[in-house]
Image (cartoon, rainbow over all chains, first blue to last red):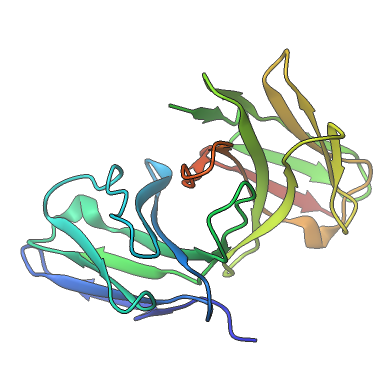
Length: 115
Length: 115
């Protein structure tokens, strides 16, 4: 079956522009996560969606970052007024249910470069 | 809050040699523990996990890790590595209480297996 997909695979933008990154989770997975992988910081949690519950936004680094999940499936991560320090690989993951066992399946990532 | 320390950023070894990748964590609550692997130009994949029960867990490709609660460690070992094990390995923890799903990652260890 299809895994987690993300688009675009690469995005180059100019400082100050807005970008949208898309994630399609595995069909039927109710939980969706965004992480960021950067050279200086490693892998950092950004935001977590679970069903219709309010998302856990505790990892978003600033108010320029936001995410939504429409219809409990596709998610979009938006970065407004991009800065050079936003350059990173943005990873999406999904898991099948909120339970005591948390196996997350990761997508290939979107590499964002801010010039 | 949890944190993860991977003591070695890079580990070079020769083929067929044993290897140990070290991971220590800090947490005020009980945790689940994971090792993820990222092969060159590929996404993150779950290698093995500790949820409960036996403190020694194994992967299908010969890696094993042992949960040591007193030392708050979850070191990854393999008795004889192959060239194909060259990858970046990430140790991660999550809060074992239901509803706290995010993964907290270490900064990763790049394992390079040389012929």
